[in-house]
Image 1 (cartoon, rainbow, N blue to C red):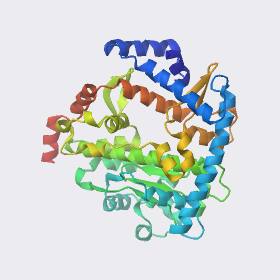
Image 2: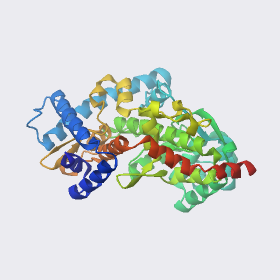
Image 3: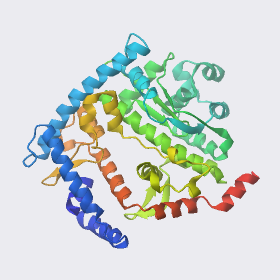
Image 4: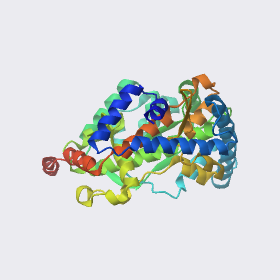
Amino acid sequence: MTRVLSELLGVPGLEFHRSLMAIENAQGRPSQDIRLSTELQQAAKSKLRLLGLDADDTTAEELFHALQQRIKADDARLEKRLRTLAARHVSAEGKVEDGIVQALKSLPVTNECYALKASVVRSLLKKQPPKRAMKQLGYRSLESMLKHEPVPSMLAAAWLTESATWRKTFVERYKSLKPRDFEMRTVAFLTPKSKGWDKLAQKVIAERKHSLISFKELGAIVLLPLPSDKPAGSTTVVTALSLQSLNDIRAASTLLKLSQVRGDFGKVVQTIVQDEPYLQAHVLDQPVPWHIVQRFYARFKHLFNETLFEPHLQVEDMSWHSVEKILAHLEPSFDFWHHTSHLGYSHKGQPVSLNVLDAALNYCNNLPFAQRIVHYGRSSLWNELVLRYLQPETVEQAVASELQPELAQEEMLV
């Protein structure tokens, strides 16, 4: 069974086996790897049958092409629904990005977050004006830009046009941030409409092949205007990435709320912006990313230790929503992709990801089987494996060590 996981994860079999055996022995041999492998094989066969394939005699390449046909049809349906939504609520043009924003705003999920105040971002921008962004968007003065552009749009323009040195210096300013610079508010979803954005968006999408910018510290997702000749499949890619970004923002929010007691709060903000924050709770020879902790308590709410996390966090804060489940809420045909985030199929050592993002990216980029993308499926499978071996005591000890009592006293004296 370890072979199945090894092939799907793309890791050396012997090395992976040793790592699993070590944690199995340490935890009394719960055989989580065997359970997960069995579930994966059964679930993959079920999806194969839904695709009209022989569950016992299908090659990896045959499945790959079947998934491409499936995502092609689902993406067309999703785009039609989103355009209809945009035409009904935004404008008669019915632009896809407007439909995505409208859909995100009306989702039946929690979208409150602990985020940097807009006034604080404006103050930071005044200290370090994004001159290239101003020029690109046609503003002669920073005051004019501050007046006409929403804060997330300004920061998005700066991130897209300013130098790496400018971005690094701007994030360095986060070191001085305090909890009072943050507030609870709804996650912002927007697509820039002001003059100059269409040209900038076209350039960015052509050069960098992406149209979404997410700011975890700001609690905002900015969707660039999509070109009229956007590739098929991009609607699903952008929507799925937006939903994934919403989960990331919520996870960052809980860590920031929890870190209010730390004297180096600003450093935590920096870490969240620059990299994935980790807890020193090693599972499978690796530290645990904070988003895994978020998912752990979202799945096992009964294990949430109020004594450790309150008053800053409540169990409701630890939410994590299935991307494919929400896609199915937007377009019912995506129900096929439910429970596929970490699902994979391997035949003769050739793995294929059933993750909806991998499938959509393969279709969007018109990739052949030999160059197929499996990244998101592998990442989700690794996270699922870590979740199954994670113990509440391990998490609590790691959290307690991160939030030392003396840091709380230090913050009170600032």
